[in-house]
Length: 239
Ligand code: CNA
Image 1 (cartoon, rainbow, N blue to C red):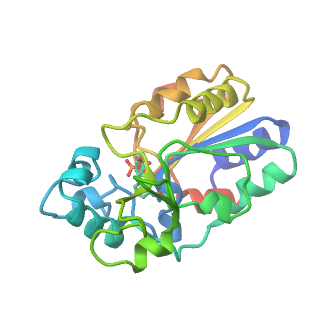
Image 2 (cartoon, rainbow, N blue to C red):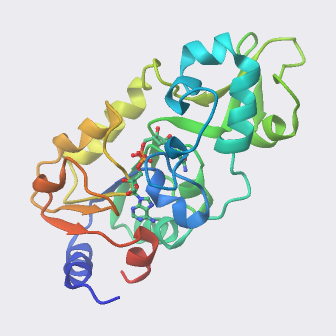
């Protein structure tokens, strides 16, 4: 693949030291985790209920058994490994070039690649808490449990994932906004930019180097200074 836009991005990366990356499910498809809205994504598969409904707070409390069946099978990917995009972002942070990764993903792959400053807008499948006593359980506990996972105190365990109908964590949101306001290069990748308020965050960027790396078109394409339509892992492998 020879793409002059990748060369431009490479130059911009070299010239920047406050890079912010804002990403979504497309960042992890090359790690083998399905996204929601691509042709192969979960939203194009058939379930008893639409995935948006299953992944809502009211569904979690109303149909907890079904929620966990879907969640274990479709959302947990504890064996997945970071790809070139996750690894490069971690390298940039260590080199003092990147100030934050902001992700809508819940798979923990940025941290697995070594990134430290990661704003997880939608939480993480790696953390789970008892709704009664707040005891912590890891992802494997949920993966290996049967039916509805319960705490030793009898309370219901809930993933630390922001479900539809739930609000985002205020501190995570504020930290993300500050990082974007201060960024000299904003790279947005692997996201359909359709889930709010997360998608609206890129409006806080004040610079003139907004890069979109996404396979499909997005409604923010006309605001981008550079667009790359290649698989994001392959793009990062060249940077
Ligand atoms: P989405 O709406 O499924 O969009 C993904 C976008 O990524 C699409 O526009 C694709 O074209 C694009 N894409 C897919 N693969 C690649 C690739 N290899 N290279 C470049 N572009 C690619 O996902 P969003 O993140 O925008 O939606 C937000 C939801 C999805 C969040 O709430 C997540 O929690 C949720 N989600 C997360 C995961 C995960 O943690 N890995 C997996 C599935 C869904």
